[in-house]
Image (cartoon, rainbow, N blue to C red):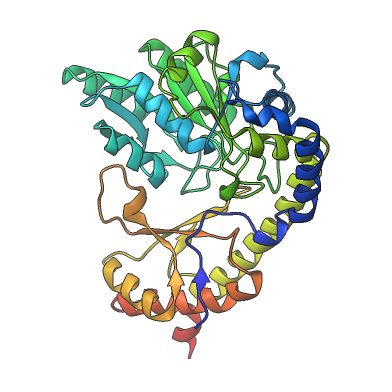
Amino acid sequence: MTTYDFGSGKPDPATFPSKALSEAAQRVILREGPSLSSYPEARGYEPLRQIAVERFQRNHNQTVPLGDVVTTNGSMQAIILATQALSTPGDTVIVEEYCYSGTLGVLRQFGTRLEGVALDDSGMRADVLEETIKRVKAEGRKIAFVYTIATHQNPTGTVMPLARRQEIVDVCARHGLTIVEDDCYADVVFEGEMPRAIYTMAESGSTIYIGSFSKILGPGVRLGYFIAPEAVTANLLAFKRDGGTSALSSMVVAEYLKDELWTHAAEVCGVVKAKRNTLFAALGREMGGLVDWTRPHGGLFTWLRLPEGIDTQQIAQLAKERNVQYASGRSFDAADRDVHFLRLAFGYIDEGLIDEGIELLGECIEGAAPGARRPELVAR
């Protein structure tokens, strides 16, 4: 039975550069293999960190010191390290109202209390952030940090404009709060210029920047990084007890990306953009007037608002019967509510399956929403 995988936040597997990476591996192992008999450097393999520096310079027009970059076992490890270094159980972490489920899981695992800030088309609302901070402080609670995905927010796909970023920075500065900026979708851009990172706008030491190589290669590579000044970096490194990020993986990826980063990123973006466009056309044809959805200019996700009164559990059951996979809205809700949203990922699924998968999902939504019908069915 065909599986329609709109649940996986992964790039297109056909864009994984298997041949080029195998050639890079052969070159780098012959050249540097003996060094693998030692543990990796604490901050990670220097050539890969240098690529992170160059990437940040190109994307955000700012050069960061090489010593401020630390490679990690995927960007998720950077989130874990920030949580360990900045919070203790019972502290409050402020996140977007709808936030990456992996981050929510980490924050809950380490015993923090979550406060979600409302989102609009420009991302986290600065006015609500201010109100939330004041309320939490008035309740006598300690705020550990503010976490945001400002560019191609997961799950909504929104991009925070420059002015809003400055507002967020200003609010956090007034209250002496650290910002953890997760920018793992920085290179998955389809159109338009992306605003520079919050990290470039904030006072040194007040922000931790997190990046990833997974979204243009694959999660199996398990390579991410964080950028922060020396004092902050040392604080996070105190919790990094893994013996070092894989030097072999870092060597192979650095050998490939040193010449191919932007060419490969452009290839990935072209393929994923075509899938996004196919998805949007299918949503308009199959569910226009029944649901609303965001229209991201990059990243891997769109966020669907479902009809009022819908039975989300019934959608899940009907979708399971049809082998249609998606991520439930509840997975991303900071307050763990059964919200009437769902997230569709469009990077991994075969483009040829999108039309049929969305048609089947439309049937599931109709079946779970009493009285709801797609426009073409009403016309019949």
